[in-house]
Length: 165
Image (cartoon, rainbow, N blue to C red; front, side, top):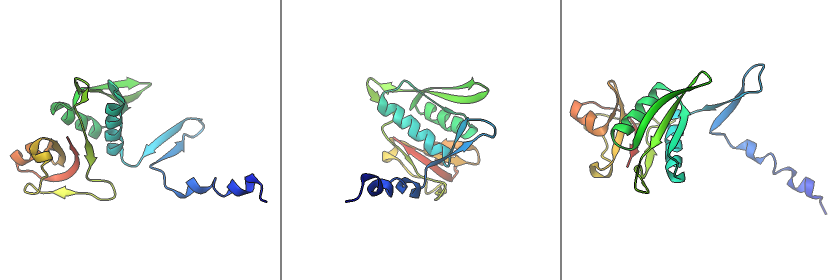
């Protein structure tokens, strides 16, 4: 009969076969680990959605110009209460206050459309309508991030970032 160690020894190396969604890098001459995400917008949307599902009041995430403009679009369309930029140890962070209607989350679903592996573009005639106009699609245009309704009014197309309802 085989000892338990040799029976399970081959299973320990199994997770190495699967790719990770983010990689870890060590800073030179330091024990600090930096998490590098391959898709920061998906990470942001997942953090917001998880915050709503957990009933959190606020979500804090690393700052970037695109994330801040995406958060401002969500706040203008009443999916977030407040967007603040904070500084912690010299690093900028976004603090997003989540909005609830009673105990119900303002954002019921969020879907990332254009991904780093497959970019999705739409011209002004092909812009998606989310839930027949009840939700929004966020479009990256030459004039910045706009909702599908604003992009239609301005006659602009672009990359379809996500759909929110």
